Image (cartoon, rainbow, N blue to C red; front, side):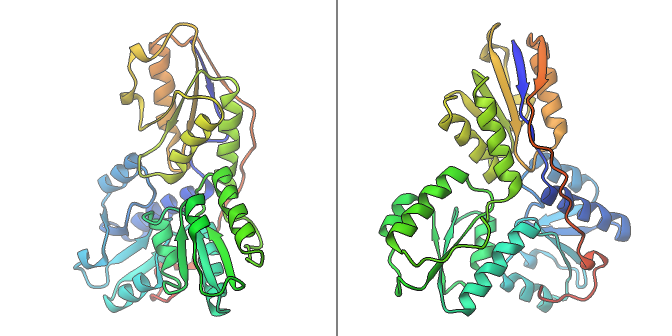
Length: 315
């Protein structure tokens, strides 16, 4: 059995930044530090931070301590959540990925100009919920080509679209083309909203699909970008493509002697998970491990001034 590992994989700049913001907050202020929603969609990351004194909440109402320090996750939140934080007397730092912030700003701009905004994404995903909250009366979420076909808007000449950052590039392209055919005057973002890391990891899985008989994507079930990587592998001919959380999901009977196994991981998955899976495959008989050539990622996002937890202000 041979193992081939995709490149790039794992943590992106936005995830690195969000986790480091929490780590710095713990160092500066000590526990407890509250985080609204999982800082990133990975159970191992969340459990590690819990063990250090981070308390994760889904609602600010769960925080009883006045003046408590709370971090908003990489996925972003709506203006209403910022308002709730002010009213509850919480001190906030926003760890939202800057690429998600870009989409929020686009929604605000289009709404101010009187446009109906089509948000391409998964309506129950926390990122989409937060983005929609920028202009709830003007945003329509579209999840599929079918929904794009049946879409009705009050003024077909005054609509714009934005996208969730972690979608499949190919699936998004089909929806966008449908919108363009139906609404020739639709406005698009100045730059595609799907983030560079999502694109790079999907391209890497496409390359991996040319070599592998079976592909495992390491990531949490809640991770949108990890699920998309499985879809990309299947769309590129690898029917046996699976999302797993780690080595515990593997068993000897899944593999054969001459099989080529491909590995990659979502943007919120630590590299330690990949290394553990490789070790398990070696125990099962893998006799070679190599990494495919791929794009180098050197992007780093600056930390917000609010890491010092200055007074709460709507960003």
